[in-house]
Length: 298
Ligand code: AMP
Image (cartoon, rainbow, N blue to C red; front, side, top):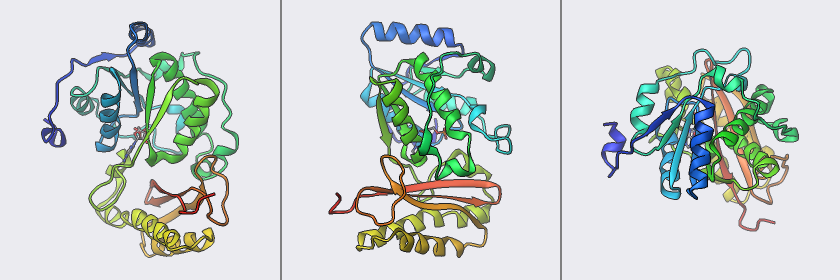
């Protein structure tokens, strides 16, 4: 058994694997007709404890749990790692069978035929943060997520705060097109030294892995400054930048502070904000974020 499941009391579910849209739609339609709630966790696989925390939460809150594994080509840019993105379906299945009722893992061909997508323009939400260096990414995410929602018909969907901008885009997508779906955002699972768990961490060399701990240290330092009463975002960002630049292998993509709702620019922190960053170590781009609400928030 997988080490972190060994510690827990688990029931083995008879997980069913589904690979066609047709079967997924039929199964989901039947479940909803029976009045059962469906908790849905969309993933790209190569699962780690971060993903599993979403699956566990879905298990607790729903009658039925559906997990999808689909490495979606439309959310990767031309020079990104679609082909080399880590995959290990056998390992993923072993993790999921203890918590999941249905594993939906369609092929790229199967999903590219789908006409179930919706028209959605994320607009200003993607003209910042990761949207700058990944200009087509969120449109690709919105497209595949809407197709999956149409097929799986979830009651609740589970996304990680780790990909904060993604949760904002999905929240707006749900508001526009899937009004009865509840979005549950789960906190970021971290390694013991603070590094956010990510399927891409396997790309890091040992030196890069050591230096990558600076991401969470910088976010924690930024948070501490805000908690001490600093309101100027420039000052906080400057402090975080200084810390990160002490690591010779780090190359900053962005460090930013934005409003939690719409990712609008902030000069002085007076309402809830997200401190977000993306940093390259070699070819590997890591992201992380933390949230802050001032005690006298307006
Ligand atoms: P991915 O497979 O990277 O597309 O991630 C699938 C889901 O898992 C997304 O909602 C992610 O935000 C979430 N996720 C990834 N890493 C973590 C983490 N360290 N903690 C919590 N959720 C995560």
